[in-house]
Image 1 (cartoon, rainbow, N blue to C red):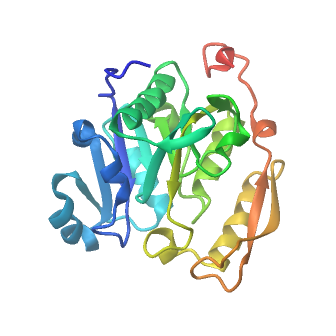
Image 2 (cartoon, one colour):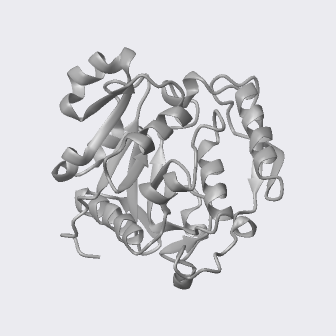
Image 3 (cartoon, rainbow, N blue to C red):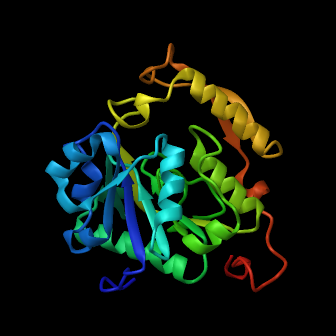
Amino acid sequence: MKESTSVYKLGIFIPSLGRAGAVRTLTELPKSIHDQVHLVVHKSEYRKYKEIYGDVVLRTSTNGIGNVRQWIMESSAYDYVLMLDDDMSFSHRQGTKLKPAGPKQVMNMICQLYDWLEVGFVHVGISPRFGNFQVDTPFADVTRMNNAYAYRVKPFLSQGIRFNRLQVMEDFDVTLTLLEKGYPNRVSYEYAWAQRKSGDDGGCSLYRTSRTQAEAAQGLKKLHPKYVKVVKKTSKVAWKGFESRTRTDVNIQWKKAYHPKRDKQSGISKFL
């Protein structure tokens, strides 16, 4: 990976809600690429964000994270779109530990995703910090990704993929749909993201409840019945808006959902 690799075809989009003045992700990204970064906010919060962050703020009249993500994909003029949650920090592997990533490492992380998109992957992502060392290789194919991911825009749209079929778990739906259509993903484990605890003020805590969570789990099961199992999971503390520490969630068989394309000209199964 060359540090000087150009990523001019990539737009970086950070949806944000209720966190003006607290968008940590923006401070983690190298200033050299801030002209390709877009902080996407609802029009009702636009002035507040604009006063703090300036020209990186992009206004939308769309409500709901799935609708916002879909709006980004359909409105982007870039070939590739990278979406990041608004409260992220990044780290990189150094031996058997994860160390905080500085601007150089974050740029290399973005370049890695860019290069994978360039060789033909339609969807790629970054590992969460929790569980990162459960995978001892620099990357993994055909696996879960959430919160930090990038897409090739044209095939995404041409395949009719949509982020707004579910109110939450929308990224799981997109990943499963692309796998089922024969497009493998690749997730970096050389780098990792972390964020504030689930249910912190702002973001999805403003609309995610135990009910919307349960409805999304059942909805994901209905959309992908062969690969999704609805289960109960318990957290150390209750998420904001939830009545208890136990929530309805899902277990997903990612590799079984992947159906390689027979046509070698489509998909990139030859790389796997």
